[in-house]
Length: 168
Image 1 (cartoon, one colour):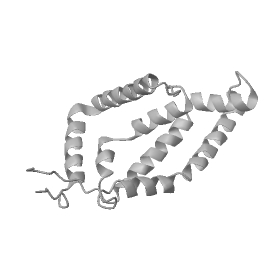
Image 2 (cartoon, one colour; image 1 turned 60 degrees about the vertical axis):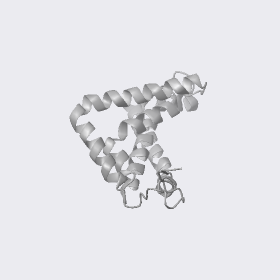
Image 3 (cartoon, helix red, strand yellow; image 1 turned 180 degrees about the vertical axis):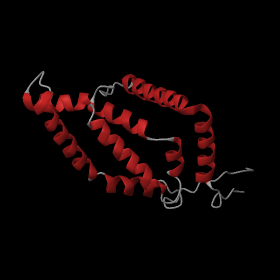
Image 4 (cartoon, one colour; image 1 turned 90 degrees about the horizontal axis):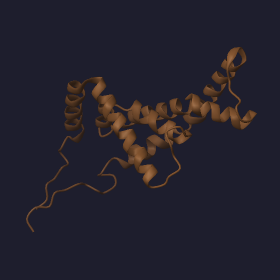
């Protein structure tokens, strides 16, 4: 005997449950949970000897992606049309992560030499130009991200309909 989940509203259940948690622990609680997740991810990466730290380019992007996602976004991922919204939040996190000072400083140092910084009256417009170019460069990721994420979230499309086998 198999339990048919085709009529099961996973999105509604997740949205309701995550919304309840988010409403009752407040923003400080949400931020604490996100910080624990970030710390756990970087601890795992360190244990596995991946060369990704919080102050690396990839680390900055990862932190900003996690900070941009809300509990409602996670529930929306499973709803019709909500997947694109989650992909937009991920792209925004990537863009913000690439605009962090640590990342911009690394880009400037690679172009102008060690210790170079964009500061003052000339540095600010150049920093803004770099930010605009980074945003333009990441926009091309939106369609492939939406296509991948939205096509791989649907169990039915992947012929992976979850079922609970009872009995034998």
